[in-house]
Length: 113
Length: 111
Image (cartoon, rainbow over all chains, first blue to last red; front, top):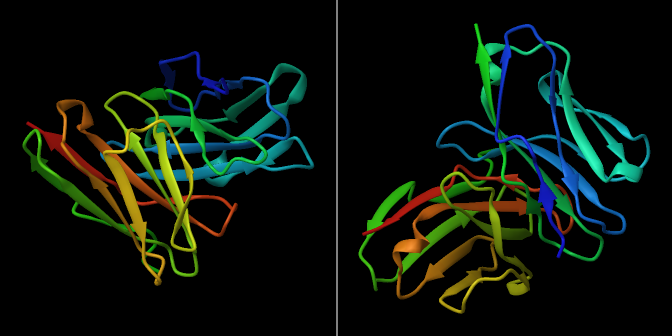
């Protein structure tokens, strides 16, 4: 079955430190890849997306992600974390021919002052 | 642009009751999807509506049904509520297969 794995349930980083959140998906042709952020009690906000082309994509709030087809990964990065980045981050995949997004279980980011 | 709006924001229902949740898509969007997000989990796809028809469905029982109106707004209905239906229900709108924009969700508690 198609699936998305976010291996880190929680990550804690110090403010100003760099961040990498991992995402792997099960094999599927032509994936469309997304990262969403969710603050407590809120809906999901799209950070960035990959459909095709350059495998390094830039998003909002200084985030970027790199698609590596050989590793079935789409890791999210930020060079310097701000306290306001503390939230839950979800990786999502849509496979060609399907209209649904398949989400990972999320990574909760905590930021130390 | 108000974005995707959902109502109500919170509600409490008793087991066995029925509930209707509502969603107004982002202006110009013609496709509405519904997701269920249990506490501590990622959202799970329930179904998607396009041109007033259910286009794709996830692994949810028939107790979950929906509707899309000519103005693209949508309703999610859940019958015979179970305790396990307690969750945040998210509506997302898009242009056919474009990126999805999510509403703030409806928090349903079944007691």
